[in-house]
Image (tube, rainbow, N blue to C red):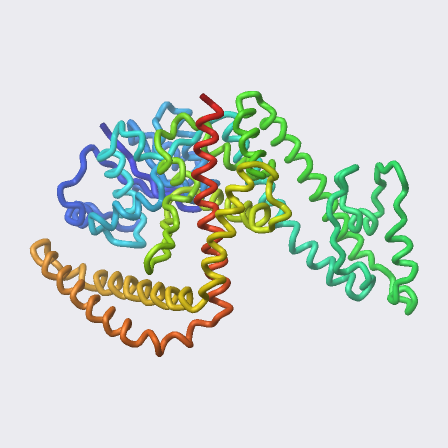
Length: 459
């Protein structure tokens, strides 16, 4: 079995070939580390692809970070009949650290990936799964919409700056898409776009006629109108992509998923991303794997003196969407779905929020404790990293014991001074931090309910 680990760069991949798991990773890497020019760094061109294929691997393994750069390599390998495996970023990092390979080294990363694949060969639970076809298209369309939104925002901001001098009455007005034609009234008016409306809307004509800028001879510039045209073009493009996405979501095989998510108050766009990650739901045998895939790897724990959540694994994009779903649809009472799910999520959010509101000083102390724990952990990691080059295998237990004793001493010292440190935690920062915590807790709980309802719906 020949496995090639590929560390993906912007215009190349760094490869490491393995046929068995090394007994001593550090020594294996030291003996075989390549110098520049590296014959196993392949550029994204015909020569580089030929070089990779000449290795004749049974499988290649990559991380899905930098998805746009890794996609072409995965596509080429699959087209050539080479199996493509994907390792989660956190799993790859932990595996590299566990075997004491150097950090920030492309060759070491490629070696760790290849060894990880061999160590877990034919154990599907250790690898990420990406569904092909329509499911992959859903994710692609969602990413395109996100990109369009990022392109659009600075253009809108610049146009509003122009309006502050040329049409100040409209500069800060919201311009939500019309339910009739999907166009945004302000930018359509500025761009001079024809609109398909049953009734003519002369709102901005009337508003501009009374504008102080017009009264004092300031006209709307050609630059501003061109910006508005660009915004309208991006909106048209966004509608095109969204229509394509909705056509895929209309497939009957997604009907049960969409019905459940709609019941949760999750909109079309987040549905597309979530379905692209979890379809088919039958592949998740446990709640833990389901939550890990969505970036909600561990429930928040508000008991005792710890407020923790392991969010290092899974999809950061999904975690962000779940957070926004709670913020927009569950936190505001009026926006909650009027059903049993909305009631459960609302009650959960309200109860967690009340814990903070009723005892802010307790949360302040917990914030300080958490900051201290994080500082200690970072200090230990840096100290251990500095000792690694001179540490032998026999020394490891003694060094670990010494570090633990040092950490305990520092923790006692910090705990004794916590009262003095308390004023350093600003009330507003504590409030904002625990507001985010409550939202994340509710998202984790919502994820648990979602798994249960999906399993019930697709039986």
